[in-house]
Image (tube, rainbow, N blue to C red):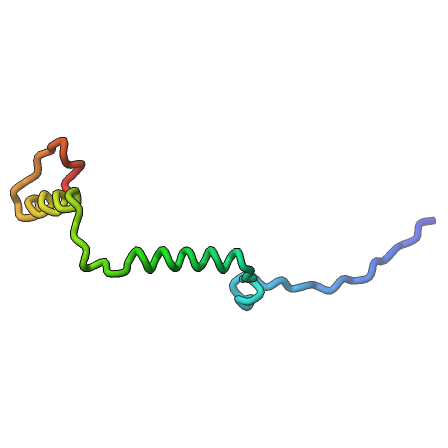
Length: 86
């Protein structure tokens, strides 16, 4: 004769999705991540610091000149110096 074996009922464990968890449990900071974040922040700050007072490079000035000529209707002709009108 066979015997029916019943297993205890397991309670459903709810796993909240990533966006509903608190940030502290998702983002565990250690010294390596802090150093990476510091380098990224330093790179962003030094890239944009005093950006308005810098002059354009020669290539940038050529692109703006030929783009302006194209904008005012003088047309565009391909030269080996330029890669495109913009």
